[in-house]
Image 1: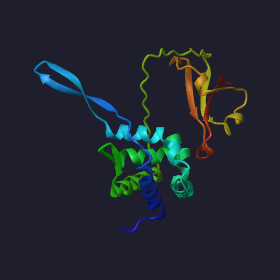
Image 2 (image 1 turned 120 degrees about the vertical axis):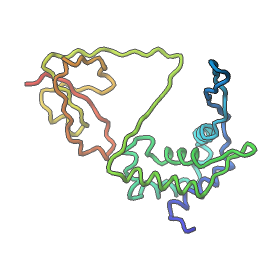
Image 3 (image 1 turned 90 degrees about the vertical axis):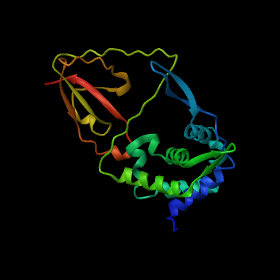
Image 4 (image 1 turned 180 degrees about the vertical axis):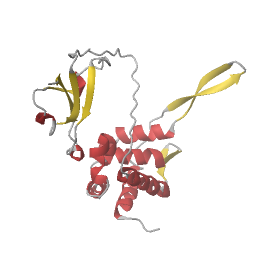
Length: 218
């Protein structure tokens, strides 16, 4: 099978990672039906999670490899993947894609990681198709244990307008007070925010952080 330059680079890099990355033992839990009215959570092996953690923790061992830099250069200059970081943030960066491919294409045998070449190529093709599509949705979920979460209310006048855009377009909206999205609370009452406008975002592919601006409408 003939591989593209990027595919061959990923295969070469992952082959060199095998001897440098050790899986980190990890289990996930599955709800198992035991009796008629009884079930229990039982631990099961999570090889994908173990490989992903191993890749993250051993990044310093393979990041300096010539094959890493060669693969990264091909990825960053690829006609599709060069926009991935602007579209998906960390998940679209080279190392994010590398760890994702490793977790999905790797298996653990006798405590060592092995990568299926055909699976690597298939996942890379799927990623390319994903980032080349006209639109896509990303759902990010995080579980935080033992931490108290809170939010600060943000009061707005009755005649208020909420604008969402990026740094390059928000300054064009005169008479507005700007603030970072993280500084604006989520306690907006439906009757307070009368109108929502989405401004055009010409710099979205440049990876600029979105901001939110609130102010009184004229």
